[in-house]
Length: 140
Image (cartoon, rainbow, N blue to C red):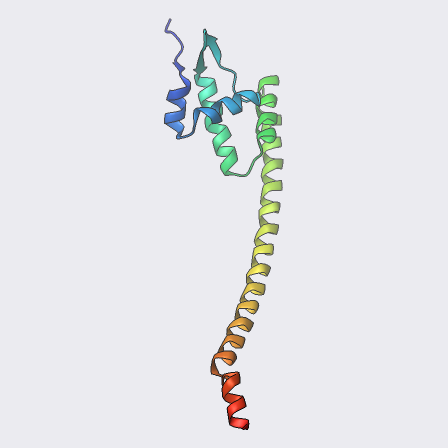
């Protein structure tokens, strides 16, 4: 029987290119549960996989609470059916939110384009108009 593989906090931090402080934060949030040997935290392969999932979830826009909910579902049930349904619901919500953000961005880009055009037109008019002192001298 082989000894289970464990990782130090520094090893995980280097592997995933994050700070040890981030890992401790995820631990404080209940997402990781390392064992302790004195003051040393020992992370299992389960913790390593969870850390990978936490970081992937962050990239996809999932909150830590949503990720924790998925971990809790996985821990409570032998089947991953409920967990997969929950993930699909989260994906639908994220896609809907991203589509709305995309529409908002498109509207903002049009508005910024219009404002830019007006500013450039006004700037061009001002640069081609005679200076106020020239207009006064011409009138004299």
